[in-house]
Image (cartoon, rainbow, N blue to C red; front, side, top):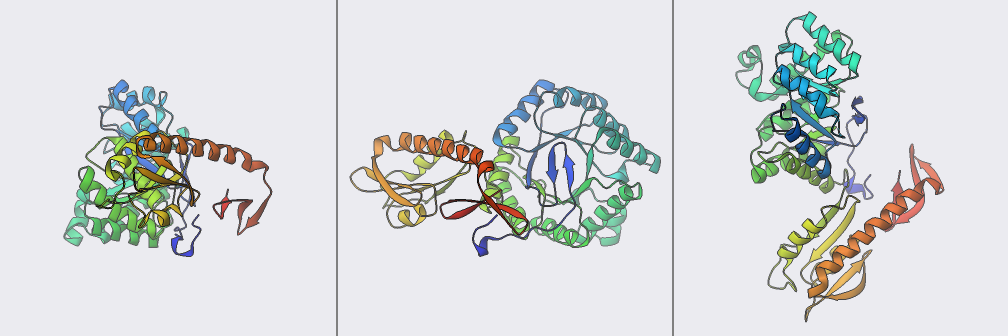
Length: 394
């Protein structure tokens, strides 16, 4: 919930589906996904990777099931992790049935490449029997031949037509618990396809820029593409696709959501690029603090500014602020106001202690919320307590 008019994002209305216990669509928090890159039959390695992603804040994890052994291994994986698992299925309908039986919370399929109508019915029955939702995953790199012949190349219209065709197959069998993705590695193509799809259906949308590249380029492309869609209110769950570890995808996904004020988790650092005016080494300080504060899950804002040109102004809008001063002493801000100074040698330890204390304070505040007086505004409940002048929303 934004607290300034120019920060408001009006999300597209959509149906709601569930991936295990995680709601997707219809105003639910935008969930962050990733995908394992271990062999699924390596249960120990796959579980370890999922747990690392879980620590980074992942909501949903996708696991590939290319063969029967992988689909069966899913049963052991599901029992060892705390996040819902999406089974990634291509072509063989029996893998989808086996994955549903193994405890997958969602099946990522294209009904059109599963086979006959009878096979589609079997997959849908398995999904219903085991409480699985589905994702129709359309990709510009694997469009149907007739669409390529019709349009001459992958384009937004082809992606949307493919998605609606597959959606219609499921709906003809009275199955509606699915979300859709129309991914492409080209940012323009992906964004245009999602924009068109958002206009013609109300299914939840899983957004992503596929094959985006390594950590740096993939992050840039995903920030442009997903950021554009999210700012326009399009997207109910997302994956940042990087040639990197899954937990890095999760961190970038969260940073995207935090930058737009859509979801908040952990410490959001506002820092300057540094210059000759800096009173301390800003780059090293920020890198160290990000590492030392990575365990914090409570949403907190922290400004680290090297001098007094912008430091006081940035500190006004953060929970805790640090501005470089002279003679090795620096100003510490709390709730936007000057509070005290600190020696440079003790600065990092002191900031870590302040952030950890603030996290404890905010956690206690949340536990008290249920007993606070409240009023209803526009269908939402607002507690009478305020924080930094903002209304706290439930």
